[in-house]
Image (cartoon, rainbow, N blue to C red):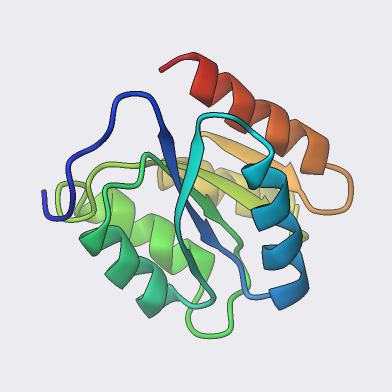
Length: 134
């Protein structure tokens, strides 16, 4: 694994989201959760994978529609080369909630799928539970 060693107490999160407004909102929400360290943000597939190689993220929150590439591409890379990217847990936060997409995300190792339309609270609950389980 490349990157920095994982710290025991902090949940190191990488946010992969193309909307600047949503990135800002989520950064503010993560700042309010004790035990969360945001190790990076990325708005495209290549930037996300580059950041994952350099950091020891514990959790990747992945939007499916990105400015460059796709969230499915990120999930596929994580599943095909887990050691290269530090084996982070991955969840999807997307407005594309079709069942076929959910199945593909799950097949690529996504633990959960949160719909942007009404799943922000559930996503934050998931993050808090991940912090508590450390």
